[in-house]
Image (cartoon, rainbow, N blue to C red; front, side, top):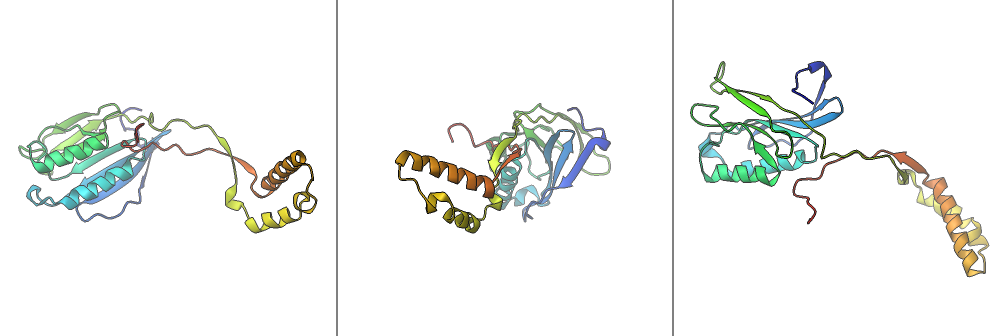
Length: 228
């Protein structure tokens, strides 16, 4: 997929995220053709000097929720001086790294400091970010061209499963009590096993029939690796 430019082919809806005290959030689900990804807009209004641990706790929750999507883009103003070395910036970058995310702005967006971000996954094609001079705001305008792939959400073929949702244990028990397995069981052990298998299979086909379903592909969180 190329640059998001053909709005007629883009479908957007809001994702149901909780409200956070540390920042404002606009979580969106974007679908373009067969591809889809989470597009998260974040704004932390407090000055850089007032950042608290609540910000990192809330932001970690956002990253955990977005990790279930095959693609993820996070943009906005986090009000951290990301161009300077400090405990807060180190904690922020470490948090991104733990979820396999990278910020691609890496240049000043307000005065001499970088406060704004364009974040996406490190295993997806890197975006091309351009930082234009401020126009109607004191923040620079960030223009990005990016691609989103669905490599982390592999194709899953339809599978057969029993419809346990409609299973009625009382009806199943009633039919089982009236079956030959209970009323007239075989005295031969081998025949009894065959009778058991046939009776149970017949009753399950009646009360929990097989259905062909297509599971929804979900990518695992980045921390869920082979060792885990």
